[in-house]
Length: 178
Image (cartoon, rainbow, N blue to C red; front, side, top):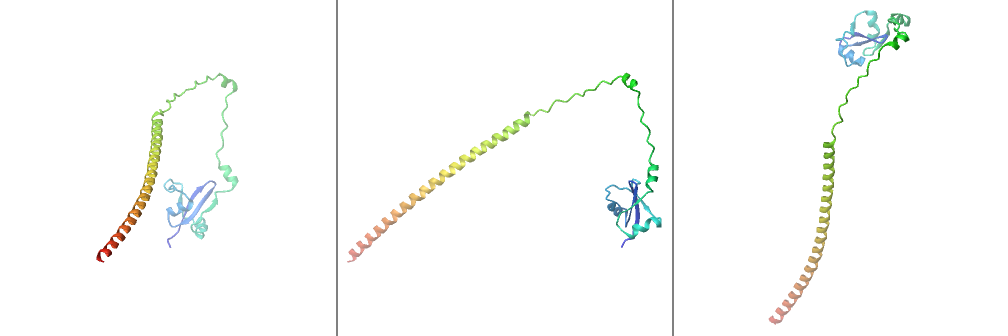
């Protein structure tokens, strides 16, 4: 197993410690996409007292408070009071004229409209041609059925005629042979 190092970065009023084999692993444990080490926000820790708990829990982020709540509040910068103008001074101050920006004209939609119309027209034309082809296909199917029916009747008639002629020939041949 790789040797573990302890790294630290501040998170709000806490320091986040993690024991990891590399800086990259520490950044992953903190869930950071940015290189906090390059920014100077994260560092390696060597103090034995601070490394004890993270080394006992490798890969786990340990949060330790940076002082008591009173110490943290005392460390906050003192808020400066906002400077207020007396009401009379505010009334005498000249107002700045509002600068109106010129709006550019709305883009021309005519090319888009023509393209939409052309598409609709092509779809209507396709539907009409498709319907006509379907009608023609149905008509051809009907004609084929009629042809097949006529052909079947004609073939049946011709086969009957052939059978009759064959019988007549065979009868004539028997009579001739005698």
